[in-house]
Length: 254
Image 1 (spheres, one colour):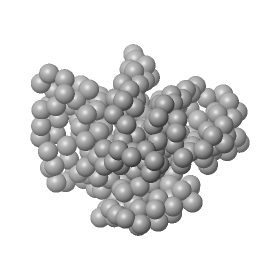
Image 2 (cartoon, one colour; image 1 turned 135 degrees about the vertical axis):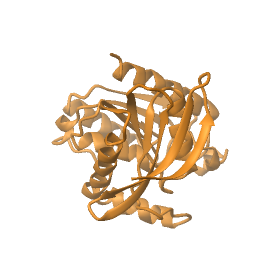
Image 3 (cartoon, rainbow, N blue to C red; image 1 turned 90 degrees about the vertical axis):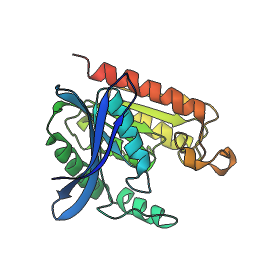
């Protein structure tokens, strides 16, 4: 059920118009509230799922969804934590830790979001990609690892741990990782383990590392002090968004 009209705005490319709305859905009995936005056209549009960072679904993910709609994609920001759960401060780590510590539960929430997104009128359920930021970057990879029938998965400064070589062959999606080369949250050993996982599954993948970028490099509210381990990097943000656009064009071609 669609609820709460959030925005009607002119965005991005020419006069492409997009209306964003909150959307209620469930994972079993667990209530979630996502956000959906579509280009104002008569076409059936490719779908991009967005997985939020550790603070839950915020205006940041809605902004990214609106940006994607301006490019001609339907966008659906999923809600992992549940309707009304938008932690701040130390609670963010507790919420994220719950799901990173229980990957099956995390995947259940992701798959519920995917199912709800595919049910939205005007989306092409055969052309789906998932992207995510920080905690959500881990989620994008987890959805791919689940064997979900999607074309692409993109992680922006997400954790790369948790993958199992025995599950790697489940991955059907092409994978893109946009990684801060100096991210202390994702040490070299974790990067190497991820590469081994991708090779084991014979996955079509590539990773782009951005020099001088640390964790959260796409998020302005992370500040501008890289010595803290998390900081915005304008160049990495711009370049990774361009990388995403090229990736989506490739996987949705035809």
